[in-house]
Length: 137
Image (cartoon, rainbow, N blue to C red):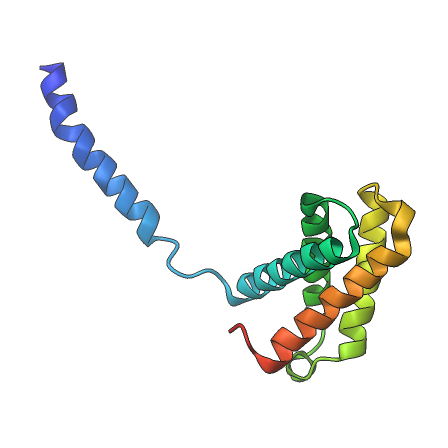
């Protein structure tokens, strides 16, 4: 009798739980999307600049770029709505350069601080361009 109940109830219970799990998180918050987008842009940009310069490994550059992208997003997220729409290129580049230099020291890539700052400035510039021209919505 126990096997009959397991065979009858378990498949429907699993189907109901899977449907509930996939339906509940219908839409994440828009702010989270922007942070993840900027972190992704930063990771890709820093991997490319690291490869061009021959600096570091792919994973380390991706981590530094992701942190830098999130910091650039955070610096703009603290401003009011009008200023978030009209971003400041100098601020994005400056925050990117500073964050990447500090992140490089923390992750153990402190021997090339100027190179890390250059990579971060490129990340800040790329994020500024993508958000200014709204290439990625």
